Length: 461
Length: 107
Image (cartoon, rainbow over all chains, first blue to last red; front, side, top):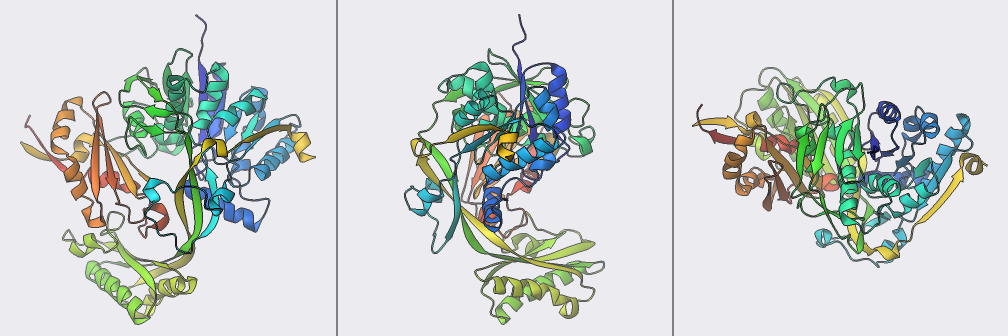
């Protein structure tokens, strides 16, 4: 029987991922000789909002900042081998991203590269007009005088399939759902109907397992002495092998570090999942409650019993708003009596907020005693009764409505260089704007998408 | 019986959605699945996070995968956009879960 496998590789799991990861994946896909595609997932809720702010500053910005760096080593090779590259790297400005891809293609002597531009996810107008219901999880939020930055709907695979049907080499989208980037090349290749829920579930599971890149091949998994992986400095990114009859195997790029086994698969399968029978994507509701996984060779895991249910009538929308200000400051103490000095410093900082009359919500961490697991009130560092730590970093964090209050609060940490306990050093402080997000639901027919495919030469003009 | 850290017999990963946290929990040895089901209850996991204002915890059991999924509500003090915590996503919390202890039969 002919080999019916189609391969989907992932080249990035978030904006900020390792930019040298895609090439080994592409080389592995090419070496297989099988029809393949690659996708890049570079958008988070905050990433979109930050990109919109960038676009306001510069109309040619607001797309994935690493786009050119990710594509530069792989663009020509992918086109020559007929392996389409899909990504939500358009972020807030897909047209500018398409122009950037076109410029890169022209510079690499690829004027005929076909670039698909997928638009329609920007629904800022609908949210600004107050026309959308708030998602139930966010119904209690007091929006007050929040200033809207933008709103984007999580669109599904349909326009991406259309782009591939028009022979796109590179697909530039904005806020697609993450799994749609894997569903689309599979649906295009196998001719899946977009109401074949079990087939789409296979695609959604592929997307879910691959969308965070190395998280399924050893990233955020390795735990020295307990869960060791080969060569963590060179973790290979994942590849899925999907067959027409519903087979799914997860593996990874050849000649790389990391690993794929039942442990990495289970950690990623349940990542950011709530009810395992009801993982909602725009294309299908994925049910992994009966799923089984089996080791099918070295760095190969097969998944069985994935089920799909009908897609929802609504799409999720993330709206982002200009928020308050975050002020942060840090100093260190170390050596004898460090814990007492750190605790006293923490109390003084909180006292200083009151003395200065700063309108802030404040928190102190004692890094080295208790921080990321602690509460805003410092329940853990206040009650800490363990051994005397050698080295403690004291961190003040405040939220303020005014930039000046946030700045003055964080400068109180700087002042400790002279006014603090004995042996206080290493001050750092900064103020950053905060972004708030709120989820809405929108009927999918209110979010029409548009696909246009043009060559690099046409776009570059 | 002997008391061991959950970290010695199981692994976990944490993820967020807004102000809600999920943590998977998988025993290395399938023989420990039942023991974890009996001892690592949703109430015990919730108690790990009440100092941060967590209001509820649900445990989903996946016997085919030999895995559990814990979902904790209102735990991230605002989530990635609102939290003052350095780890706004709460990703380090898988290791708070793994700091729980369980009673293992000797031998």
